[in-house]
Length: 226
Image (tube, rainbow, N blue to C red; front, side, top):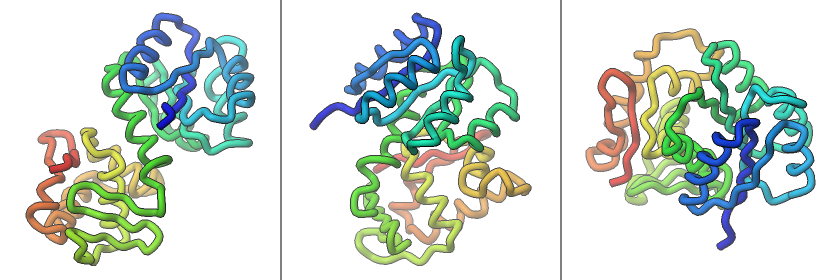
């Protein structure tokens, strides 16, 4: 099977090398660009790029303008890297169609985990609309969940919550992040509403499958395949 190709865009050569080294170790093929214009030239020439890791602050053409141009023609997954941690920047990124937003400094291992999660959502996990994780099977087309081939009745939000957990398996997710991604930024509720939905979801999945959803005390949840 061919390696998935990732375009890493950052004006700092050291940062590009760190990101590239970790991605290559994880069996990805990596192409580098030092600014947004160079990234666009590469992106529109190479039709096999599966994901873009894109810095915000760059010369010639910054990350915002770069992702705007990409989104005119492509839905390729984009992970934004930035040294700025302001909420309005993160909101702007998601409004532009960014899939993930990571603030510097960050753990390269966490970045690789995010890349893995995003690509699972957009490549292998989309085949035939079926997603499997342990004893859980999700049929996206029929909007149906099975545990050991037995259909499980979930509410619309419970289905979306489970789908989000499976797509991000192995990654610790804060209550706020879950709320923002499953309920969208338009939802102005308490992050603790997540706890209620997780409790119901665990109960409906049954002991074995439900136990895959682990509580991260003081933070949120993580799904781990048994």
